[in-house]
Image: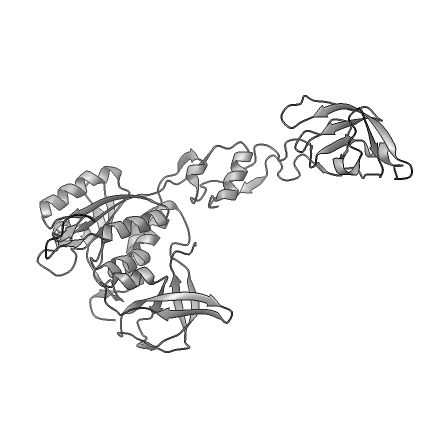
Amino acid sequence: MPDGFLTVEDHLEKILRGIGPLEPYDQPVVESLGLPLHADVHAPISLPRFDNSAMDGYAVRAEDLAQATSATPVELPVVADIYAGSSRPFAISPGTAVKIMTGAPVPRGADAVVPFEATDRGNARVRFTEAVREGQHVRRAGSDVGQGDLVLPAGTVVGPREAGLLASLGLGRVAARPRPRVVVLSTGNELREPGAHLDFDSIYDGNSYMLAAAVRAAGAIAYRVGAIGDDPRTFRRTLSEQLVRADLVVTSGGISEGEKDVVKETLSALGTVAFPKVAMQPGKPQGFGTIFDEQTPIITLPGNPVSAYVSFEVFVLPAIRRLMGLTPYRRPMVHAVLTQDIASIPGRRQYVRGVFEVTHRGAKVTPLGGHGSHLLGSLAQANALIVVGEDETALNLGDTVRTLVLDRPF
């Protein structure tokens, strides 16, 4: 490990210790999609709420059809029609049947439902040619969920199925931590908005778009400010104006050793943001701290696009998940077989872009592009990062390597 460098784990630990989960509040179920429940959810009602029919057919007493066969059919009068959502409480007498539709409440006195296709579909009278068992095609009240049951423990991430259950239980709102509001901005006099005129030494600002998209993909709310020039006063004023809507600020650029590194120059003066060198490649320069009276956390990333993206995956994504109360914080690693040799610098953890795929022989990963931290084209083609440890100087074809598969759900 080079002198004066932090490990990836050391820097990440400082970030996670400096950021706590946001306070939960009641929010609409659909808005809680992807968020963990803050408290246990107990069923306020039973599911089903009442005995109801699982088929379109006739509600009967099984006892009345005990002797029914094709040779000796049983015929019963049809005394009513019951439809889902349009019926009143009803009871049948022995020796009668009720036409009933799927989901409609089974009348008192009935204990079975015979599907239409097993009858002659009569209206005034209906003929049955086989016996039925008690409970046939009847969904019993509480057979799915009983009132008071623990249906979703605290920490459950709300997905489509959980949202459907909550709504079916009559719960339109649930307690969950909010989506973090993340302000994203990049710095540099050379940066221009896509579509704007380029001078001979200017470039388009891809970083703020890439990082804002990554924030949204993580389930948070992104506020893309865009590019700020290298004037410290402008940068400080912009930061101050943005804090009203920020749970976290993420910047790219301006934290290296140059004379125009506006982020480092401005935030170092506050005395609350540290700018360590982290033993990783790409992404050596990093920064983290809190700013202004609001003590808003800020994570500063390098300006080269590959460095910015890798740093987001390694440091910002865990921070966002901690704010949301999601675990694990870090993207899980998988193992894959390497298809090419890789050389690495000792003492630094290297994140190599790669293409991960699963074949009939198992998982494999192929290194992609060079090591340059400006190679955005190969980054867009990659779907994985191959992790080369600090003590590894070479990985060989056929080795099993640790791999971060990007965009895969946790």
